[in-house]
Image (cartoon, rainbow, N blue to C red):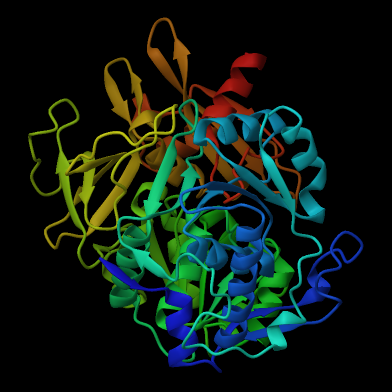
Length: 524
């Protein structure tokens, strides 16, 4: 099924509507002079002009339909231009995490069979380093590609301004991008997402949380993650605005919410916790426009949810993943009071079932914890293998997560299957222990993991970040006693505790459990 390019359609339907807002003073002008210190408020017509010109430029450099182009960029207006330009070229984006090491980026470029690599002033050093290790990789420096001047030009939106553009139509089966999972259980997997995956995800999200003409989605998540990119697709399909930040920063986010009439924002729990600790966190409460805080990436503990309820913040706990083009379920603010702890109902067109851990064909009854399976048009067809080919498509996709459905079909996510701790034959869910520890007044953050043990198979260990506001003295005995007082079973109590300054996190704010485990093994 083919349909007109989403950006072209938006530019024809509502050319004057604002597509992107970005403040140039938020980036380092010494390494990025492309904005000429001008704040941006691009209309859909202006964004279309830029995307068409960039597509034409890329094709002049040899980019062809089906070629793979690695994107080594941080959040920036050029990121938005580029993804739309690639759509017009029919090329595939390979979305690279700029926080990775050179060796990790090299591995992903080789694994995906990338033909081109784009970068800018902020990522020049990394780009030059990795290209020295890969033969026949074409590199493109976007630092000086025109942004502000072209946006003022006018074009006939009914026809192509460059007659040799190869593709202004999109196909549901066409791969839009390759995204790499966090790699918490070994080498990262390459996830190919099609335009059909993104489209069905955007429509399903809109049907669950609604879309209004004055919506303005604040993007502070990295756009190289599906959670950040999905916002760009939702917005262009709905013809609404995004306000882009170069990174997550508490002050920048709060200022944007207060001054940019933001209506929606996507966060992970770590980000929200930091916002609530900020001296100006009242800007969240006082916003008259903010109607939704999508909270995903990791399960939010009950204490955080209760705090948000008390502050009357419109949070929307959400469950999703790269392989499903973002959202699977979402809980609405009106449902929070009677479904605390739930990740919500499946979005339109998405099915969920819970199956036995050992027998995937055995569906479990209401309330029973098992493996979460999902299917829908938003789900990828299969992983790329190490040679860059797609693996077989399975009707039901196994998320690798554990959870259960209640009698109303609301989903409760318990843990990653790989995070499950089996100690002395008993299953222990880290999230349950973490929920108890988070209630301790001295604890700021905690991650519960399983460490290998000859006698028990694995023991419960807790990595704890203490609050810095006062000097707390905690011992293993005190922590175990606190957990018992909260009603935690003895076999679930931590057997070892490690006090750390910070927990390792991915660029999207997820705690990297496997990295933490490796680090603790080194000191044990």
